[in-house]
Image (cartoon, rainbow, N blue to C red):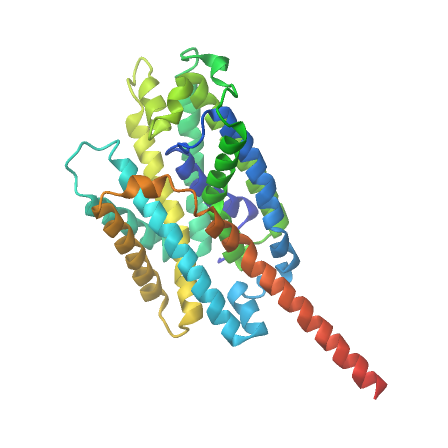
Length: 364
């Protein structure tokens, strides 16, 4: 079966967002309270960005965005394919680079970065070659493991907090700027919404219900996760490269002294799910440009390009600047809203022309 349920697709997107959430906070944000406000505003913006997809939903369901574009014009199909290929390469480039860069904070110095890049990409390609239903089921299991990990760390950290509720404040040099940067960060991390656009033909339920489940669940998890990490670690979460890892190290039981290994396992699996879904969509995007391209070659070749770009940037030891650069939020917004808006507008224009032609024929 090649279909995704509402919850499976939501799990795919939530796995990707959880991977980003477990890494860092934007350095331009002064405190976690600003980020929580920014996350709520970002959810409202993302809901608005999805409106064109709902208007173009029927057209996209019949074969996807590439088939919908081809019904309007074969040239438009190629343009849309090139657009999503570029967007997804950028997306995979950031995921691979962030994973490898922040891995430095877990693995002792001396490991070769290319081994991490090859390993995570190989696992992502393997998942990306699977059917959407397999990707959805895998995401469901991995997100469940993420929830179990969070529950264990929370239970083992109860009663151990740094500043408690005092950490939630708005003592900031520029509250407006901090919230704006937090919104940009959440929009960039929300690039997983592109999966809703590209997996729509495989979705059993409506896109609106899936979006509502994802956005509401995302906001709840962001608030709960940031809230508890801040409760335990205080303002240190704004400085830590891996705040969840720091909290896992801080948590302990009579049997387990640290939860670093659990964090590592969950974080890696979330990265694999995110890359697997992205590679799958990337293969479909490049095949919209070059139709005869075999699926396996399309996925592997585009994954290799993403990995090569990330490895080149990592080899120059300039990734910290890349990781904390929030300017990519515009790419995320375009990936979610631009193509559905064009398809919805093209569909409306086409219908009006057909009606005009019928009216002229009736008069004759």
